[in-house]
Length: 265
Length: 255
Ligand SMILES: Nc1ncnc2c1ncn2[C@@H]1O[C@H](COP(=O)(O)OP(=O)(O)O)[C@@H](O)[C@H]1O
Ligand SMILES: [Mg+2]
Image 1 (cartoon, rainbow over the protein chains, first blue to last red):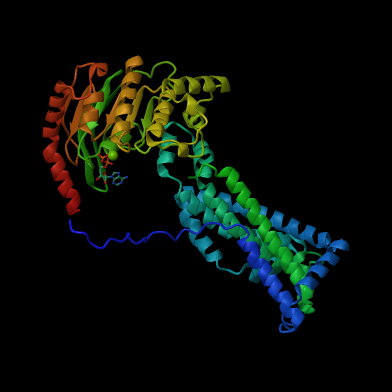
Image 2 (spheres, each protein chain N blue to C red):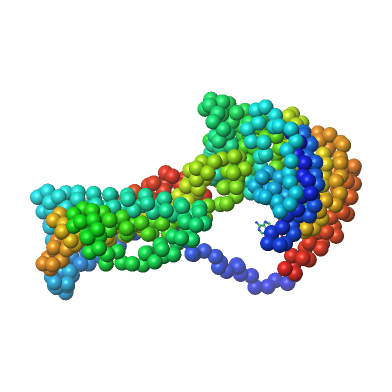
């Protein structure tokens, strides 16, 4: 063969595979904070546009030292835990029933589709009439808000459970409950847990809404009061607490996934 | 316990899939079902195992399952059907759990059956850590654990590569030689059929009818790779199937 021009084959693969880079998220947070701090100090961000991060930290410190932090945090967390537990439990059970029974599916899927897009906040007055202005209406709002996304995620997850596994269970003479407990539930767990991330985030959003009416203490009440007074430092301190709550929830679910779903490839 | 399939026909939405199947499944023997793909082999096996109701005809159980048999009709699936969240031992246990056995007895059965299938070292492994051949060994162990009267295997080796298939065939032969079991073995691979079948039922293309039942008297343990007698039986089976397979193939293209 005659000598011809040789060159390496150009590489065309790679990309489309994002990986987690340690500290990148933290770096973004930090640079935003530094930018704001510098902006507010040098004056090109006016005090009415954004609060100074260091002032927010100071407000936060006061919240902590006066003990008000826990006075607000405890009722909020209680509402979130109670409301979300009710909503998620009912949601998972309903989702499994929808996933397994034709009549339940045909009867409830349209209903769930109709309930899902309703802004639950709009129903708060109704809940107040039904469940009273105290804790009842707050639990109900959060429960209702977490219920619909949990149902949708759960029955989708049940639909995705490998039918040959269920057929296998039947072929070994397993009963209905055993199949649900040992095959359907673990098989649907990945979908249920990722649905839980969304449901609980919605729960935190609704927490603020739930505390709009008749709540003396609570993160939501604190934020709304600060907002009404245009007290940006306190508003942001409250918002930071909500964000931290969101990160906490997401971390906890991540840890549960790691434990329960170690079988996934 | 023998099984007898009597005048069995089946259809899906008016499309005939099986037509007038008569078969005898004798204790301690392996019956292979071969036929072109789509001819209704899996359907027939599901009906035999009671996972589906035939349109007409029936499957009769002759006699009672032997003592100690937990699940008379037990499947081995082509895609293994292992629970990915259970270890090897946990998967083998699954079939035992429905029968209210004491914990110690279950552990004993599991370790015995894992030893028989050479899986003892993998008892705590998860399915994702196993190769295809290993997964199917686990599925076979799971089936053996419930001491079935009849094992129903649906293309158990079709998802595996040729070497692994060869190894597993040897495993099945040695398992059968040590403790003969009754099996209906569905395959489209004629080499598997002549290696493992005491009798081989050839199905026509859809709707599946029995074309011929071929008996092979040579003991399983003596059937070596590339045996001349088996080759000629295989040739004969292929001649029966060739036209059916070609026609079935063309049908799929037209559909
Ligand atoms: N549940 C079902 N519903 C409708 N058609 C089916 C169903 N199962 C199988 N079939 C059809 O029945 C025919 C036989 O299928 P199958 O028994 O799986 O064939 P084989 O196992 O021999 O390849 C195929 O044409 C298939 O499409
Ligand atoms: Mg098949």
